[in-house]
Image 1 (cartoon, rainbow, N blue to C red):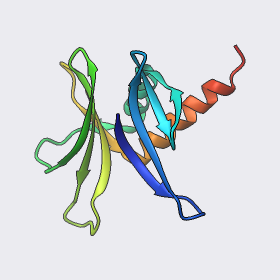
Image 2 (spheres, helix red, strand yellow):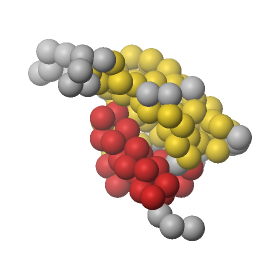
Image 3 (cartoon, helix red, strand yellow):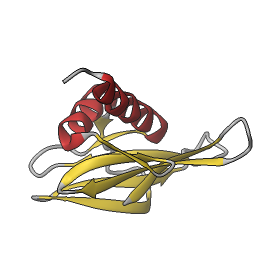
Image 4 (spheres, rainbow, N blue to C red):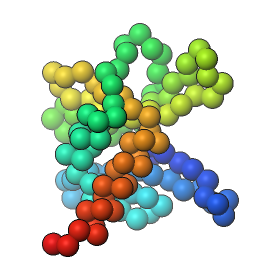
Length: 123
């Protein structure tokens, strides 16, 4: 399990978003509540919001989640020359393709939305 985002709620409590492998499938865990999301959703979110990773930019590795088959999700931190505070990013690595990188806040919000929408959908 890796933490990809955290915020402070209006009540002052910390709220955490994690990615985990549960029963062989990707899940997003929000404050302990596990929601099935699947790697297809991650791939779609990263294709929509991500961009190829610039190899010359220095990144600080925070955590990684092995998805199997050479695929992985990484949480990295980057401090650009013009930023005062480092920003958190999610990197999606797939063999034989460029790694895609997107802001962690964007990825976590999109995945939580998709997972909750999937729960609300009638079966």
